[in-house]
Image (cartoon, rainbow over all chains, first blue to last red; front, side, top):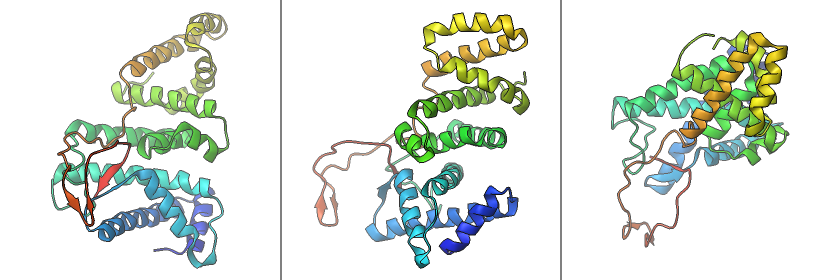
Length: 188
Length: 94
């Protein structure tokens, strides 16, 4: 995988608005998260229970610990990685849909049966979030962290250095946006 | 909803959502007097908020276990599973 220092450079360029850097950062984190999930499987030799939150924390620890280069900001990392995790979960839902077996990154029969509606709905949510992120990135991030990654309001508030009430309000607001976008697809 | 419209309404929605539910109708009436062109939309969004809260929109994790066979009694490595003691938001990865 990428070294921590190049990830830092990508993160900084992405935050300055570089689309290629954002894409490269996305795929680097995506591979890293997949690698970690597979590694966990190999280590246990059996299906393992691993939450999205745990996976993100572990990815951060590994990346931050590399090459003696410390990744500057855990919270910025979590923000990006949560968006990547959303992609991972949706890809998983799609491949699970397409082929019940044979995916490399698979949730076993122990876990989830995802029906077609959910798969489509997740994709719609994701597209609506990408659209919203252009205008209000903080709102889209709360949904990534809360809904897709399972962080609590309290954890998100600490990460973003805002009050828990603010996070809750952002969450409610974004739910309205998504509900409306998905339900109606109407323009006002 | 288009992004421009959303950005216009967004700060007002913040204000409304920071109020207790029972004060919102009165607040909206006052808002209507000042910004009649936005009040209808804002009213609809607040109504939508009530509806989505009722249907627990986005409150459960995206990948939800639906049919879990019991593992009780199985042996995993050195461990035997005696009983399930709880569940959380974890996914099972393989």
